[in-house]
Image (cartoon, rainbow, N blue to C red):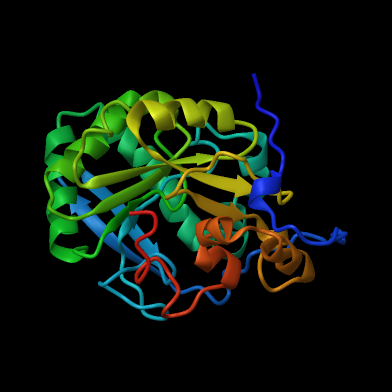
Length: 280
């Protein structure tokens, strides 16, 4: 069953009715994004550690990031994706505008499947964890692109995280693979959701005590987002255009505090995942 989500009066200011003018969605651009990578050599090949100016933490800056993420393919490696997230996925623009970066994701998608079924599974988790421990003390993100595609992969992620003292974070719609991850002390699991899978996300959020990260495409938000939640506005609702400004203005103070500052206001050295701990 799909929950019909409406913008509740209690989360919208009591103001005169505002007519939102329809605007074409604003495409994300990778032209002003600094990307980075590291070739991680293992017992039988290599994986790519990636990163960019938005997600880099203490190990880098907006214009000079250092790798702190592991990524796969969008959609192909996202078994829990919804129609809305597939349509809005920012990785499509990376594929189009930065194909060499996207090729790293493609390589990882193939190689990790080999690793999971090979005798070198544990050795690879050692290689990955040691590199993360030495290079990503500020934090490590799983999946700029892609998601947890199997229970075996979930166990492998948990194993890597558990071998480090580094803080890790992940956004996932693969709710059926959460069990190995929720007990990992240094991994923050965020449940990505939208109106198509919100009911399911709510069930798992209550079961495991996890944060919901809600992506809105039309400006409507659930009425029961608890403290600690995050709202990600789609491109048409971001702060640089009239529609986004009207939408943000009409939110309550509580819901304004939920909105991802980077996605809504834009990237800067002071406004990126590095200085922000909201999702961690």
